[in-house]
Picture 1 (cartoon, helix red, strand yellow):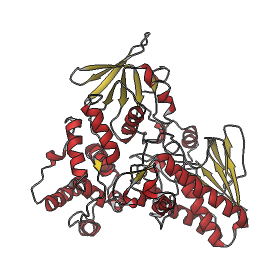
Picture 2 (cartoon, one colour; picture 1 turned 120 degrees about the vertical axis):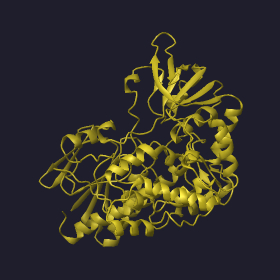
Picture 3 (spheres, helix red, strand yellow; picture 1 turned 90 degrees about the horizontal axis):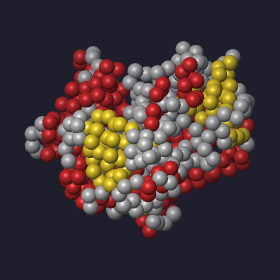
Picture 4 (cartoon, helix red, strand yellow; picture 1 turned 180 degrees about the vertical axis):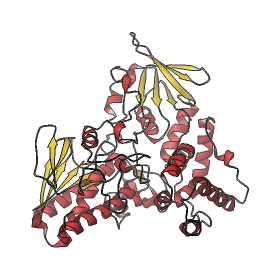
Length: 506
C-alpha cells in the first residue's frame, strides 16, 4: 500500500486531492493507494478565504480562470452557467458570464462540491481516503517514511509522500499588539471584525492591498457609519480590472527575446532589461513616449487615482493593466530567468507596482470604494511609519506618518499581507520542519522547491515532501492565484505517481 498525505483542506488541498484521484484512477491500481487528508478547520474544501459568509467578498479573478482542473480553466464558468448563471445573486459584474466575478463563498461551494463528487468516486473505485479534522503539527522522517502527528496526538499511517497545501499565513507584523482587545491580527474570518466594529467611530486598517480592500468591504457592507483609514508605507491601492481586458500583442517583452538574450550573452536576465522592455511595450501600445517616473503612484491621492482607474476599467482597462495581464501565463518563465539577486531587486524596486497592476480589484468593488471616498468615509494615508498604543480605557492607537501627522483610531485591523519567509509564517508545522531540516528556506522567500516537480529540497527531508501555494512564494510567482496553483498541482501529482508506479518510489 502506498500512503499519500495531504496537509491542508482549502483550495490547494482540494486541487491536489481531485488531481491525485484522477492520476490514481488512470493508473488502474486504486486499491494500491490510500490518501490521508488533514484540515484543522471544521469544514473541508473552502479554507479561510473561500469560507467567508460575507456576500460582498468577491473573487479577484474572473470566472473563466477559476476551474479546479488543469486543462479546464473554464470549468468553474460552466458550473456557474449550470447554477443560475448571471441571474445568481452571487455573480457580480457586467459582460459575459466567463468574465464575471462571484462571491468567495459561492466559489467555496464549487470547491466543496467537486471534493464531495470525487470522494464518492474514490469510494466507488476502491481508493481509501481518510479525512482528519485535526491540525498536523509534526512530520518526522523515519527510515524513508514520514510520520505525521496532529494536535490531538494522532499518528497516522507512515506516509510515502507528503503534500503541503497549508494555505496563506497571517501577517506577522505588529505581533506585539495581539494582546490588545482592539487589535485584530487578520481580516479572516470576518466575524471577528463584526463583533467589534460598531463600538468605534474610527477604524484603522494596516495595508492598502487586496486584503485591505476586502476588509473595507466588510465594514461598508455591514453599514459601518464611522471613518475608515488605510495606513501603508506607499499608499498604493490595487488598480481596477476592466470587465474585459483588451488584448495586447507584445513585441519586446517576449519569451523568444528573453531566450535569445540569454543564449547570446550567457548571463542571467537583469531586472532593468525586463523593465526597459516593459516601457517599450507601453510606448507601442500608447503611441507616446513613457517615462518610468510617470508610472510611480507612491503618495499620490488614492481617491483621485481610483476615479481615473474606474474610467479606464469602463473602457477595457488602462495600458499598464492590460500589459500586465497579457503576461499572466509567461510571468513564471520570466521570473525563472532572474537570478536570486535579481529577484530580490525586483521585489524591492518593482514588486509593489507590479502587484497593483497585475492583481487588481473588480470594478464592482471599485464602485463601492468610490462611494465611500466621495462621502468622506474612507481615506488612504501613505507614508505610514509607526504607531503608539494607548492601553487606557479607550484603548486607542495613534498612527503616525513620516511627516509627523497623526491619526487616532479605536479599532486596528492588520491586512498587511502574508509573510514570505518560512521562519516568519507562524505555522507550528513549518517551524517544526525547519528545525528538523526537512525543508529549507529560499533567500527570496518560501521553501526551496523544484519548480518542475514541486518537490521540496532539504538536508534531511528525503525525496517525498512536496508543496503548493504560498509555501513556495520565492521560487515561483503567482502562488496566490488558484489557476496557477492548479497548474503546478498537475506537475506534482504526475511526479508522485511516476515515482511510485515506476517502482523506485524515491
